[in-house]
Image 1: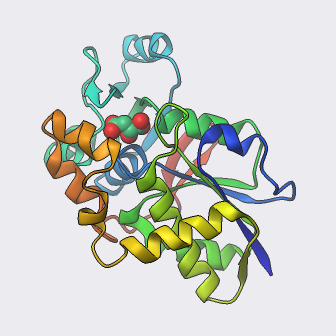
Image 2 (image 1 turned 90 degrees about the vertical axis):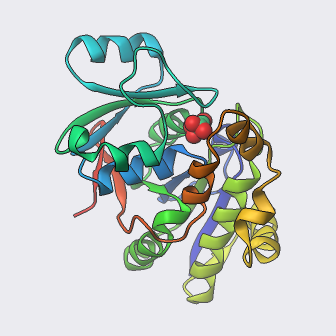
Length: 242
Ligand code: MLT
């Protein structure tokens, strides 16, 4: 049997139980992993995650398209914020382009995964859930889910979707949960699964996004399987798994 572990924040990944080889799945449902998956699904050639805005400015000077937000709002020098809908609406601008990308939490969570050289780093969202489950079952390796949360705090939307992944993997009979976080995430998913949008409408990050007029992003991010691809991070860039 392969193991499943959930880290509710990137910082908890440092002290994970799984010291064996594993696939790291980064989850930032609202909105980074959903937005990145959507950009690639709508034609972007690749996404380069960048931690610091100072480095992102250098990428702009080198001619890259820039997508970046801080506290949910588009960074002033960026071409895009962190909205999946903007990549759909402006798909001709991103077609076959490499985008330098920096968000408040999501790209930091990817950075955290990079520090420990897992077998693979892939991006998970509700919009690519079934496709990613298919990949994880095929790979048949231990899995650690890294929830981005918000500024090192627990984020319930990431935990619920990690629970959805857990449910499908353990239902298959090939995986076992090895931590209380996974058990908690499964319980949250069981409560939320029949109406995810209603269950999460009062989450702190849903409220933040509503306060800046981004309700439509929430609905898209909480809609199942609309971007059926697996984004994989390799050699500094996130691309669609072939
Ligand atoms: C993040 O990466 O912190 C979030 O996706 C922020 C946002 O909603 O853009």
